[in-house]
Image (cartoon, rainbow, N blue to C red; front, side, top):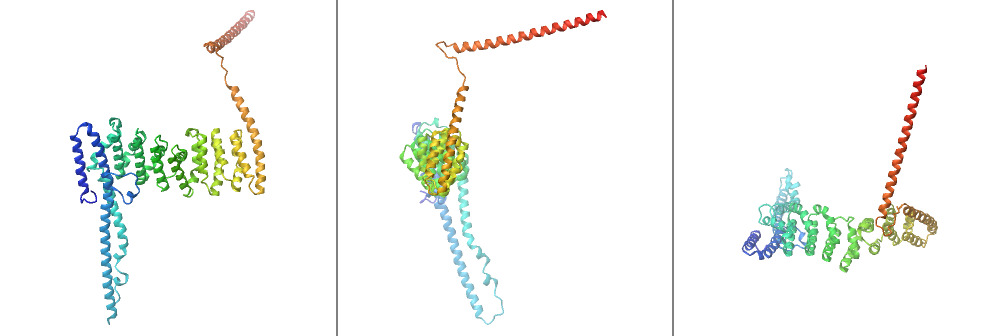
Amino acid sequence: MFKLSDMPDEFAARICKKLVAKIAEKEEEQEAVLLRRMFFVVGHIAVCQVRMQGFHRKMFFIHGTFLLQLNHLDVSTLGELKRRSALRELKAEKDKSSKNKRKSKRRTSSLNSPKQGNPPRASSIGGNPEDDDMGCVGAEADDAEAEFIRNVCEKEVVSGENVLSMFVPMIREVCLYPENYPDPSLRSSASLALAKFMLVSSEFCDENLQLFFTVLERSLEPTIRANLIIAAGDLSFRYPNPLEPWTPRMYACLRDDAPLVRSNTITVLTHLILNDMIKVKGQISDMALCIVDEQEKIANMAKLFFTELARKGNSLYNVMPDIVSRLSDPEAGVDEERFRDIMKYIISLIDKDKHLESLVEKLCHRFHVTTTERQWRDLAFCLSIFNYNEKAAKKFMDNYGCFTDKLHEDSVYEAVCTILTGCKKLPRQELKQGVEEVMVKIEEARAKCVEDHTAGTRARQFKKPTLVPNNGNGNANANAGAKRRSSRRSRRKTRSSVEESSEDEEEEKENVREQQDVDMFDED
């Protein structure tokens, strides 16, 4: 329709009006089906009317009337504008060449003529100044045409008084109050129509991002969540800056219960990250968690992603410390066995000696900021699976003080011994001597650390309060408490009575002294 018709927008408007008329005529039972079809149609129209140049080759899901409008403005309208501009430029070049030929003939005839006193004209030497700007005309014309199409997308497709803008309140109503619309297919069509409308206009996208991600998080149907995460990828590709703050919401879908949602999410994020559309952040640990996913397909996709990421310069090296820190956090809920499987695969992708040496130092320093034995074990395990060269071994030995106070943990001690044993096999003799010296210090620190840990454990046990055992009598502890309270009251009473008696004695002594003074005065 959009390729064959001269006025496809008017034809699409007539289709939408007929659909609305049918909805008004049909019974309430068939209203949901017609609404579903209408949402699909209007969404398809909008996208096809405003598809940007080259964007259609990289989008994931767009497939509707919305797609027709998007394709119409880009492929048809913008293409026609560029074709006409090219024709104008071609004609200008032909005129310029013919003009230059005429000038060349005139110059030749003037040289051959006997009159040679006249100086050459500026136009014959420097040419026409307007010809120098011809190279800039094509680029400027393309920019102007693209800006015109962009303004049409922003102002005249899904906003203003356009036919498609009349359907926006209906789409938002279904997305805002899904409990009022029990048909899941209707909710799915409405959510997709919303996403397609957002692809048209950046202003409309900004206004509805909160609603979009709310539906993505709270929808009960896995199909809706799976569709919207793909739509989120398209929005990130089209509007990277407005979507950047919402990236954590996209990563959160990697922990969705539905395999379809997780699969679509890892596909979208792989596409965006490897094409530098979004930045690699700490949430990439959720991608690493997919390496041990129950679904083999998802696990293979995650492994492929990290393999490709390792080839992109320092990308994997930069996020390695964050992956280790986040996955070893007790709040992440990743058991040790799965953590070790993940790190074995990711660390095996670190093939540069410079990265290896730096990671050894960074993981050693991370012992200072960890507080749980689980984190110590995880860090020690990661250090134990590196392939150590001489420089990495020296880095490890120089930073052994970072974990000497954690050696009471058997797993940490065993991992350190394994690393030092491997470093001892390196060929350099000076390094072997350094390893032996460090091993002696490690044994001493281990003995001291175990002793301190044991003493601390005993002290904590000694400080715990002892409760009166309940030997079949439920009021034993209560009676003991009552006795303690009564004894404290009696001690307070005794203390107060003693203080009162001492005060009476002092008062009596004072009275005696006053009487003696009076008697002495009378005798005088």
